[in-house]
Length: 273
Image (cartoon, rainbow, N blue to C red):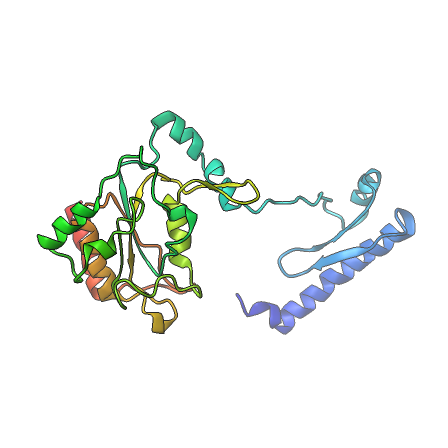
């Protein structure tokens, strides 16, 4: 368990492991590599230590008593957004299907969106779109949205045909630079392809899709999403004929319990299936 390492039993076990490691280190210095320097010693999750030794001495170290194995240290790359699409196989998917999200709408219900970022600039004129400002106005005048909106203010561009804050002022408070979660999610889902000053190309997966962005975060709560607000946004996303509704939220490492109302929606959805 998580508390075990601080117990007396664990301390005694770790001391025993470290004693064995010290023996092996002394043997290496005495008979194999006097210049040995130990970097890290492991006695909680592993039993071993890291060090630099000449490659031609590895077999001699492996032959020492109490040595189970010697393994080379590997380096793992940390994928960046500029490489994520390639690592996920998106280019091959584009080639096979021709699908880049063109003519589709992704509704993202989240915290905020930096509408000034180049990933959310207007789409190229040659890209087909599903939602226009006239469509937004028609829905507003017809079935209506769960918030009173001005279509001319909600519609920002062909990339962002509908951007509304469901908790605070509909057109203010975006973005909240202390959070940037919504911007991050939107960029992964459907950010435009663009090249930065260093020549690195960045792109979301459905790069030619439109983004309907619905902020449902209470700015006074530090980024928490408000249930009645995001349920209203979900309904409006359906009215907007969104092809996908993305809600990338939960909790900070603890079991997340959805509100009763949202839970009922989930149960109804399961019954329909």
